[in-house]
Image (tube, rainbow over all chains, first blue to last red; front, side, top):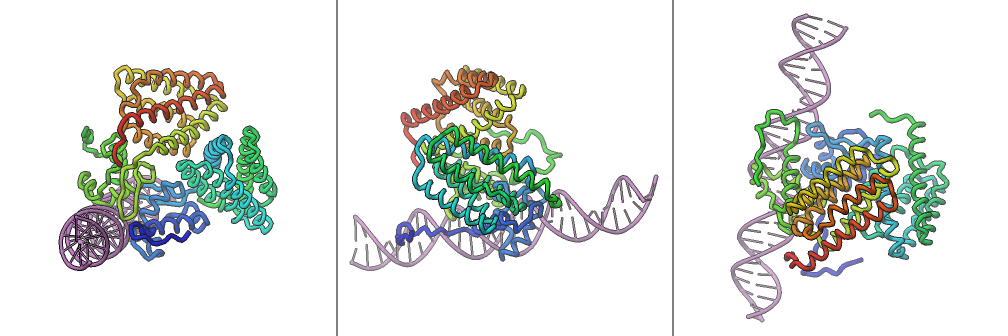
Length: 231
Length: 231
DNA sequence: TTCGCATTGATTGTTGACAACGTACTTGGC
DNA sequence: GCCAAGTACGTTGTCAACAATCAATGCGAA
């Protein structure tokens, strides 16, 4: 990991201030630090980061294009409020990308490294479920799926999926108890993993569709049963 | 080439300057006004738009995230140079999205409005082919596919596909003669249209895969036969 | 009261200047 | 002549102030 310093190419990742602000804000949005619907006041955030509005503005613009924020000209930028339609669209788009990734994987052969990564993710998920740490369950869940997409080695698919995964976490952090009672979650991912190694094309796709379908149903139930936060 | 505003705008409701600069630059990149690899000098562009660096900077950042530009911190922003791998990745990602859209369309039924739009696109394409206007052929081609994706009514799929389509145009404008000799292009789209209305799931997917496969082959041939521009 | 409207306050959009960084050139030494 | 360090230039990153726009409030008239 440690790279010997070379004169011709020191290339230390001189992270620009905008970049660090962007990732900080993104993390805070995903983890629920900024609740959906709240307005992102530029001067306020800039003060929090001890910087000026410039970098903050760039960060917000970027996150808006990633789908975590919504920008209205002259009105401001607010944290996205995901509707039921948005959630359905999210899972639909994720399924589209993940299926394509799986198709390529089954065609080219599943790398052993991916299997190891997925097994690790499942283990982490099981552990988190046992501890009822739903934050980590969600992280393991999305990590599992992102690993599958990344294994397809498509720069664009990976980038698009990462954006969709972030939006999904934004939708989930409102419903921290979403995973509660879904004891079948670990089994479902184990099943996906098994089908992925077996190479059973049709069964794998069916399982993925059911998997996302279950997630949608669970989300809807929780949303219906819990009072929606004021918008 | 220079298309001035058609009117002194008394009622431009609320398009921010950044937005208009963004679309202007995007159009110019796609149409080849800024050749791939060239650096986007902020002050230069700002002078061209008679504005300051602020809006230009925002526009460039946005286009970079759309994939048309690549940004290196402290070095500058350049027009993306698409490699062969990029082209393959583009078609792979497009196929992933378009297949998902088609699946939903065949499941829910193809809207009549879509059929009309596609027929119109094919007519325009045939006309452009007859006139050997490859710029319009490319526009009709991408319009055809974008219409299919839009008909699936998925906000995220449409947005992602639009970005991929723009990148495709960026790759095509280097090879303006790409379509030359592809007299089968109109037939292929007619075939896709027919299969879409017939609802033949499997045949439609096969046709789409062949369609993109043909495009890839043609692109590769042209790139191999023509001297690659220095990078 | 209630509707309409001007005014106020706050926030975003834009600008020009300053600072930091990378690149290319020049200069000195071998 | 060639290489290396130092330097100068150009570009990007950041900042603070100015202008434009929107939401909210208060006032007055029907």
